[in-house]
Amino acid sequence: MTSHERVKKHAARVPKARVDKFAERRAELGEAALTTLATLGYARTSLREIAQNSEFSHGVLHYYFSDKVDLIICSVKQYKARCVTRYDHAVDSATTYDELMEGFLQSLGDTLRDEGHVHRLWYDLRSQALFEKAFHDDVVHIDKSLEDMIWRIMSRFAALSGEQSGLPPSATYALFDGLFQQALLKHLSGDAKAIEEMQAAVRHSISRLFAATTQVPTSRAVARKRKA
Image 1 (cartoon, rainbow, N blue to C red):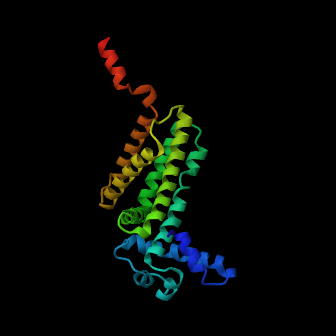
Image 2 (image 1 turned 180 degrees about the vertical axis):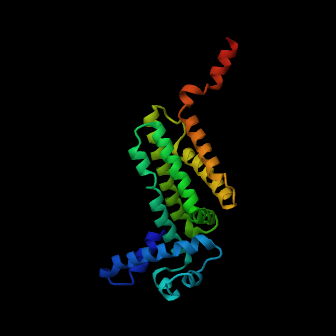
Image 3 (image 1 turned 90 degrees about the vertical axis):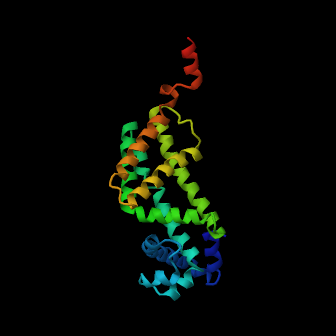
């Protein structure tokens, strides 16, 4: 059952005229709980713990959310819905490959530096989806939205460079998600160079992707050259 289905089921308990207000209240509570969730993580968080670290009572949280899974998914979905639009300005405003590169790298570094604890919650949730069936559908949905976000950015690089990356969307997403998660771990562990090194790795990866068709020789081409 997805979080949307949970909302419909829970909202069925109240009059139809209050459904929108119910959803708005859930969104407000989910946003308020995000800091506590990001600080404690899935395993150490309960509705009661969240209530103790917020202005809302345990009873209020329990009324709007069936359990902590419901609340965590609501919070993370709202945050990631904002994340997928984070790079829109860089993509839309860039008129050259270099402008897009600098804008993308700047935004990437800013979100890791300023919101690393929330990204940590997302990776925690994604790992839990391997064990908790309740997380699976929502995590797959969020992950696909992030893949689509990366593909929009790479498509703009392709348009500005005149080259195609040669990788499908899923592999492209896996590449940059892996670099980001690795940098996040280093950053949260106190590595002062983590963001700078991630930006350098992302720059190199993008340069390789969009130079591959013209600058990187294939193994057959190398073999023919050696024979000649």
